[in-house]
Length: 340
Image (cartoon, rainbow, N blue to C red; front, side, top):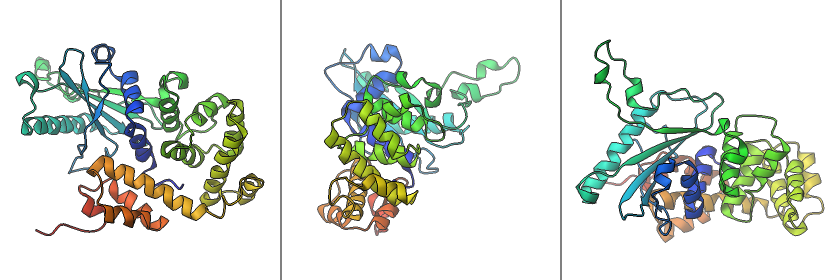
């Protein structure tokens, strides 16, 4: 599997596409007072059609969830991943635009609990090269003249989770969520320790998410296959699974164009037919990723389009994946504009 151009965004979307992983992420990072009021019997509900800013597509990894409280009321939680390497000083303004759009949608649908607007908890997941230094509310951005400080009202506050500043073991109680967040945190850093390698490899499994994690930690975190294999063995992974995972790692290594001799050495002795099926496997993985992300953003694709995706080349899938993350409708992704 080759990573799409917007690789960080895709990893975050895959992370929150699973209700169990999303629920754990929210329990780990929501304010404790919110977590204490959550209904344990009702998992978070992913709200389809996430809010995308039509004027600027800087925040393309947003995810919106509806959470139910134990008293029967609701709180909508807005979780945003800022995947840029440069911090964005317009973030408070960007987030408040999203909150206003969420409230507008609630009003349009007539779903106003108790006659008022539901609260929105905005969270920024950041993983850049430098610590986050952006104001955490609109109020902090306003510079009022002396004596008029009261004009800067508390409004538009959000929480930021700078993943690079959190100890790896404290990122999450879930092995999968912890692995994904650490991968993002190490995307722009070098010298991954053995302990961190063990955490990262714990997110690798025979699932769509696990395959993407493997590609991400090889290509983006630059963790070489021999260290991945060592981490798998330290974890006590059975020999058959190690062979299968390392065969996939070898495919990624060869496709990436790095040190081909190493990849050949890794492939040697692996299951027969792995390398021969590499090209088909890569395209299949990209197609799976595209269909999952398209479903999250626009809903289920028509069967004809799904078949078209399944039969597309690796290069075409790359282009569609890039287009998917900024498109406002599915027709635009395929280069088709609706006629009026």
